[in-house]
Length: 129
Image 1 (cartoon, rainbow, N blue to C red):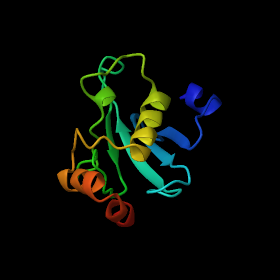
Image 2: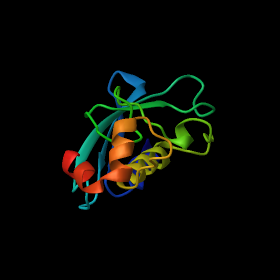
Image 3: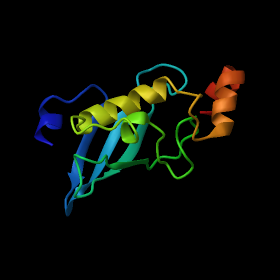
């Protein structure tokens, strides 16, 4: 937590809830670039006793239309699944998610409609998000 506060990446903030150190609230801001155009998005990170050996469960609170975000807000991102490493801290997780927002991976879709639209009709995708 201290490290995130002292060396906070641009557009990222996060902190544990007052009454539960295992539950964090975070905010990611995206640079002024299509399609998100300066959007700000809220997330939760739920840690278990197995952290840092297992990744936290990360979900968007904000509703998202994105190829790599499921309807429940959970995120299809390799470092939160099979590529997890205990060296990843909260800043690394949130920075990776911020990057994913700007550069979706339609080849690993959590939302097939968004992935199809992103691949086949980027103008409509940008309008929709």
